[in-house]
Length: 152
Image (cartoon, rainbow, N blue to C red; front, side, top):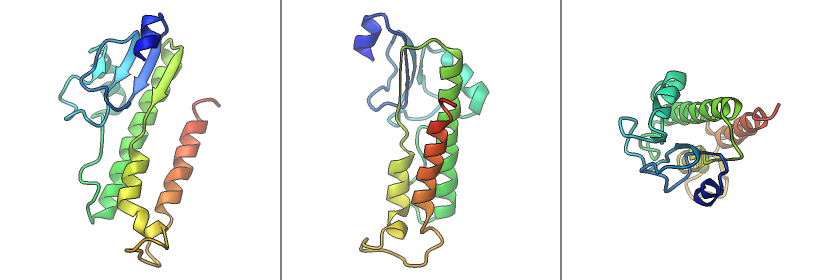
């Protein structure tokens, strides 16, 4: 993004690791999971933060305690976080000029940490017959639909 910015290309960067604190780019930047919370400056330009929050409310960089045993709460958080990130990305892509777009969604990592043992029969802590057995696959199907919706 730095090289592209220097070359005059318009960039939209969302959630890419190592982007907190936000630095100037030729375009738009929303920082990553290293952002302490949404009270911090997490966008470039700074006024983009207001546009993001008007669109989705409190922006989520990560979920709380992805190793929790409260799987229903974790699942809800992951989908809420992912939904907000995709809504913001689609909004920016459809309304702002850009030559290059990059987004990192941390949701798959959090799904694997929280639900892999239910999905993988070879996992040493596998729980056969769990109601979460299809959670990982369902999430990937959801991601596929979201990605496909970028370019209808």
